[in-house]
Image (cartoon, rainbow, N blue to C red; front, side, top):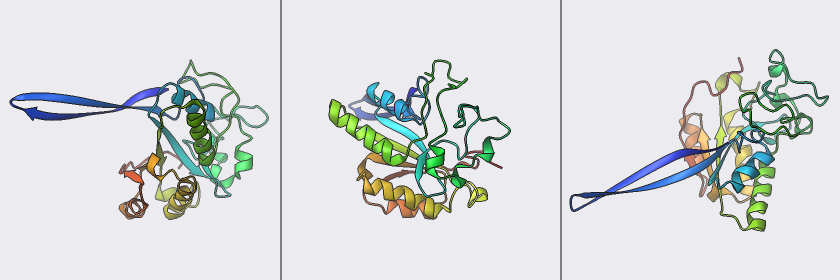
Length: 225
């Protein structure tokens, strides 16, 4: 689903007259999940071709320290299926803890064949949870090949102290792994970091050249306990 997410209005007064300028930023929230599986390569490509200025995505870390695009740190029963094709049940979804799984294993789970009941128009296609590096590579190549306008990436990093070492690493490790990919792909000037972590880590991120960061504090970014 491509959504209009941010509307900023700047006003300037000139001889008792006020003129307004509106800058509208179109963000593809988790790609184009109204029509394609969320946080999938297919969804991000769809959002890009529909004119999104920004691609919003979520990250988790796998057992082998891979930076994976996923909203939950587990296999959601809303849309994920096992490699066998069986649906993930609500009662077992948190048993499929992505931080305890290697990426090779994570990639074998299907994130699109069942669709998503919350998005009835979503296409049912077999897909997987991609790596952040793959999203960068695919989107930047698509932009170059089709001569499309450049896009930004709004990356959300959730961090909750109660689940450190269980569903995610310590925040400094988490951020360091993400930064490695961003810098390796030379994406510093195209990335915003959307945070739910403590101020000391904000200082760490702000000292990365060119990188923008947005402060966002939310107590329950996801429920895992």
